[in-house]
Structure formats: structure tokens, C-alpha cells
Image 1: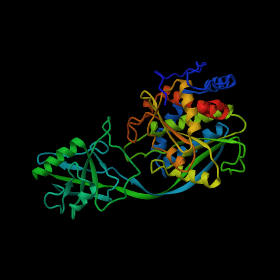
Image 2: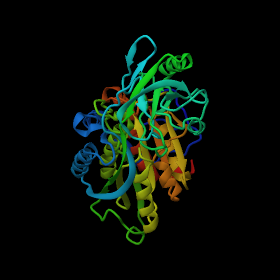
Image 3: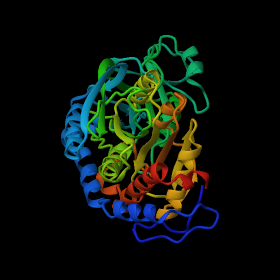
Image 4: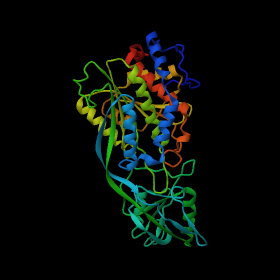
Length: 440
């Protein structure tokens, strides 16, 4: 991908870049008019709303996610879309129903470990609602019965199970992010036979030393359960046509689909996880780009938006939607935005499926808007659409602090939102109006 020296958010005509197909004058005029409508302030307000307390981190199947969905549906309707909802089942979603209580005695003093910073519950943990206290030991060294076992660095969880018959639970070391928070996940291994706590690296090292000395104990619980929930994708279409069309209905039309997941990992009890950059920022960009494109796309272009649920549980919303599109024989060009919080020199782009033309338009759009692009992993919903045989690109820009309380709205940059929205708008217009771009 191309890498201009500095991104820009201006909308004046750009000079032609050698090695690319020149844009038609009518296309330049259309782009200028469209990009002038992109509002960074409106996107910033959208991110702030999605990251607010009432939406509670927007966990799949939760009340916060449902409230966010209603709010987003209203925003789509205000932009002139016909809105529909598509529920689907998501089994076995992990949920912390109360903060774990964990105390560690090093032989001299008792230390209470802070949930989210010093300690968290591993996804493979069995449920242990009540606090259990036991001596410390090292997995693979000594009698495990009735003890909390410290798993040495480098030992796999599978091997630790082999040394843990009769143990109270396992203690595994795990790094924290730059802000000192444990990383929350919903997609991962099924629960195993034992409670498992993760300790930050420094705490794990200290507890390991205590266990080796045979002088301390630990008391803790793992209040985690698994729920079968209902997730819901949110669809908007322009103009007012049926949201789930067939190939016959759209013969002669080009299909452009903008997607972003609106779910987050959700709040823990007593621990806010706002999910601003991941992926309130992506949702804000898609809403803004769709609002602008709806007014400027050619009449033969069918524009739709899918705000997806269940991404944090394994990209299940996009898997559900992609299967629907494939069954109906509909083949849209898909642009997925998974984060637009902070540009670290360039936006990452991942293409999949038959995306050569779409990628050419995206590359040209990056040159035109001055946004640096780099090929890189965007492990999100775009991969589900690509796996279904659709032309799909994923765009990601900055995810610092994601899946933790550090993912706050104040960290999402208005300039980044604007730059990525302009990139999406320009790509959408180029791929649908300027055939010369596709051969650049």
C-alpha cells in the first residue's frame, strides 16, 4: 500500500499521483462535495454516546448492548435508512457476575489483589463462587492436594492440569497493557476442570517465590459463568428497499456494504470497560460515511450498513450475515472498519476474497485523501465476509487500551475519525463511479 508522508483532512483537489489512473473531473467534483460533509464532531459525539454508562460496554446479550442497538437504529433512521434487526443465538458466553476476592499471604503480610490490575479470571476457569483458601505450591513440584498451584512460566495449561489432581486451582502469569490492565476476552477456550486465576507478571513472580519457599497461602474464587444469549445484527439500507434482497432483485445494481461491530466485551462488576475505540469509533465512521454516501452514490448503487453483534465472541454476527448473503446470491463489496481511534503513522488494511478492484479503489482513496495505508492484519468481521467469497477489506487505525477500562472516548482522536471516514467515503465513490480507478 502507499504511504504519503502526512495524513490530511482537507477536501481541496489533490494533484495527480504518478502511476495511478487520473480521476475524471466529475469524480473530483463529486468527491469534493462529499468530503466537505464529513463531520468529525458528529463522530466524536457518537463515540462518546456509545462509550457512556447506560450502554455498559455493549456486551453481547446484555442490556447495554440492547440499549445501544436501539440508539443506533434511531441514528440510521435519521440518516434516511430503512432499519431491520436480525437476531441469532450465541451460546456459552462467559460472564463475571461479581468481582473475584483474592488475598495472598507471603509469610509476613496479607495482600488484597485488585481485580483487573493484579488479578483476573482465566477464560478456561471452572466456576468457583465461594472463596477457598489453601497453601501455595508450584505445579509439578510437591503434593497438589488442597493447594493453589503456581504454574511456572513456560508450562502449558495442559501440562499444568497433569500436575493438579486435587488442587484448589491454578495461578497463571499474564502481562498487562501499558495502562496496567488485564485484557478481557469473550472468545477462547471452554472451561476446564479447575478454577484458574491470572496474575500480572510481577505478582506472579512474587507468588511463585513464596510457593517455592513454602511460606504462604492464597484465598480466592472465580465467579464466572457461561450464558446462552441472543445477539442481534442491525441493518440499514438506502434507498428504502427490502433489507435482505436477492440476486434477481439487484440485477444491474452494484452492492456496497459498510460494516462495523457495535458490541464490546462489556463492563465487569465495578469495572467500566467503555469500548470507545473498539469499536465505537468504527461504528461512528460507518454511520458518518453512510450518511454522506447515501446522498452522493449513483442511483444504481445499493448502499447498506450492517452494525454487527457478537464480534467479541468470535465474529459471529458477520458469520451469520455472510451466510445469509451467500445463500441469497448477493455479492456486495464490503468495507469493514474495526477501529479508528488513533493513527500510528498509517491505517492498517487487510483484503480478502475477490477484492482486487476494491483494493485498487482503496489505494487510490488513500492517495487522494493523504491517509497513509499499510498492509497489515485486521482480524475482524472482514474475514468472515471474505471467507464467504465476497470482496472485503478491513480497515483498522489505533487500538491502544482496548478490551480494558483504558478504552475511553477521550482517547479517540477526532482527526483520525475524520481521516478514516473520508477514506471510506472516497473509496465508496471511486469504486462505484470511476472505472479507471480499478485498473490503477
